[in-house]
Length: 171
Ligand SMILES: CC(C)(COP(=O)(O)OP(=O)(O)OC[C@H]1O[C@@H](n2cnc3c(N)ncnc32)[C@H](O)[C@@H]1OP(=O)(O)O)[C@@H](O)C(=O)NCCC(=O)NCCS
Image (tube, rainbow, N blue to C red):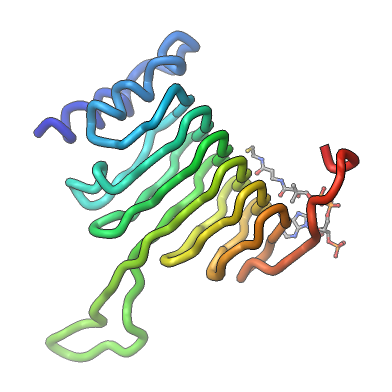
């Protein structure tokens, strides 16, 4: 009940600067583990009910609009000073490829880790078991199925290495 109430409240706070500053507090009350002050525009889609406790967000991170977390069991851990673009999906669940009559496809979960200072571009999908290394950039629209090395840019479907982020010239 608590998760339902506070998640609904946070997702429906008016889109005003004053609420942008405090919305993370209401998401915390819904059960997300939020380590410090951060900005969450919302709304967040969190599935299944009870999934809020499986989400951690570090201090100083910015979460744009319409982010989805599929978190029935394993966690999505987002570090500090991370930027998440609009409509990013974190999916900790995978299914078997073969449909077995009477049984379906089955399913299993693995955690997702996004290390500090990562930027994930809009519309990206991060799949089960992936770690995005510190300072990496995920280009808009990527489907990330493998770990991303720190300080690299990846993009595409499935996401591939684009280049290293090396110097001040990249600022
Ligand atoms: C990845 C990004 C940061 C640009 O990085 P960059 O290195 O400065 O980009 P460049 O334009 O020099 O492109 C480098 C290469 O990456 C490719 N690339 C750029 N964006 C890409 C994308 N979204 N998907 C796949 N490949 C992409 C380019 O085609 C280019 O490939 P090439 O070398 O074979 O020609 C930018 O394209 C991006 O995706 N930004 C996210 C924007 C966003 O989501 N904003 C929402 C607000 S958070």
